[in-house]
Each structure stands twice: as C-alpha cells, then as structure tokens.
Image (cartoon, rainbow, N blue to C red):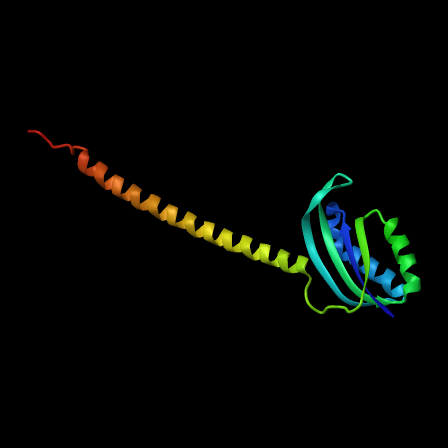
Length: 153
C-alpha cells in the first residue's frame, strides 16, 4: 500500500454542490480499494492564472492509501470528470496528520476578515455616536441663536 495526496480544483460554479461531489469521489476511491485518511475542504480560492475561463476554484485535498495498480483508473476517471478543472496526484512517503498550508492560510484569512469587519463595525458605531452628539450640540446652539418671539405690548 502506497501513500498518496490528491488535490482537486473544482469548477467554482459547483461550490454549492461540493458535498455531492465529495461523496461521489470518495465512493470512487473506496471502489478502487483506497482508504481515505484525511479530507480537507479548503474552499474557494483565487487561481494564479485563468483555467478554462475560471478565475477561482474550489480546492479539495485528499490524503489516502491504496494499491498503485488502481491509481491509473482513478486518474482516468478524474480526467473525464467535467467538474474537475485541475488535479494532481502525488505519491508521498508518509501521510501527515497536520493541516495543509493551504487550509491554514484559508483559516487565517477568514479570521482576519472577521476581525476587520468587527473593527469596521466598531468604527461605524463610533461615527454614529459622534454624529448624534454633534447634532445635539448643533440643535442646542441653533436654539440659543434663534431669537425667541417676545410678545410686544
């Protein structure tokens, strides 16, 4: 049994149907006597260059063990699957249990986005408070400046 890492870039228009694709691909692997050790759904990412007029792709990484005789059949099925716009199958010595660099980068960028949105929300709230306080001050000043009607007798 050899160890393999497979990375698939899926058509970004099918991002909502990734779960269906994953079950179909995992069935293909198990039918060809491969044991899946780890699956990482990295998500949509910007591609370095356009592939088939796609500028983004949905990344999936599989770490698996299996018979090297069956890898050619899996690769043939991957080639003719229209949902997959690129793939790479690597034979590795040891399967790492750690998260891939792509996944950690994706998680970090999500955390940074959420932090920046929280900060921007705080700034917006402060701006609104300042607007209210300046409106109150200007209203008070307007009421002082405007002459009040005095009844003349």
